[in-house]
Length: 175
Image 1 (cartoon, rainbow, N blue to C red):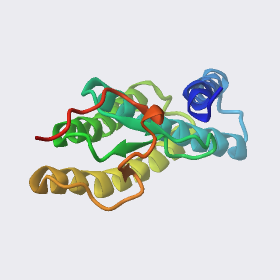
Image 2 (image 1 turned 45 degrees about the horizontal axis):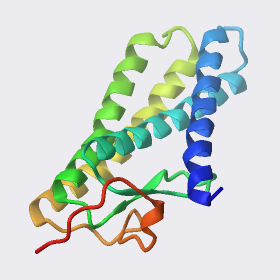
Image 3 (image 1 turned 30 degrees about the vertical axis):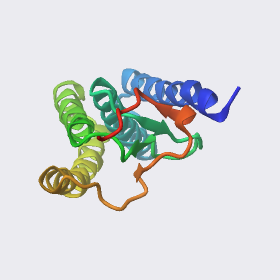
C-alpha cells in the first residue's frame, strides 16, 4: 500500500479517534475533576477543533472539485497541500470552508458546553485565540488571492509533481 493510500485511511482514523476522545471527556466531566484534568480536556478539545477546521477546508475544496495532496506524514498538523493548478474559485471555496467550519464549531461549543466548569472557559479562551489567529492569517490571504488571482508563496500551495498523490479531478490545461 502506498503512503498516500495509508494516509487516506490513517488520517481520518486518527482524527476520529481524537474527536471521540474529546466527546468522551465531555460526556464524563464534572466539577470534581481537578484543574489539570480540566485544562487537559480543554487543550485536546482545542486540538480537535483545529482538525475540524482543517477537514472543513478539505471538504469545501473537494466539493469545488479542487486537487489537494494529503500530507503523508501522519504526525503533521497540516492535513493537505493545495495544488496551485486549481482555479481561484476552488481556492475561495477551500478557504471559506475552514472559516465556516470554525464558525459552526464555535456556535456548537457555545450552545452545548456546560458553563459551570473550568474546562469550558479554558476551551473558550484557547479556541478564541485559535479562531482569532485563523481569521488574521486566512482572511487576508483569501482577500488577496481573490483580488490578485495569484497564490501566495507558501508551503501550503504547491504545483504537485506526483499526480497519483493528488486527490481530485485534473483541471483542463489552459489554452
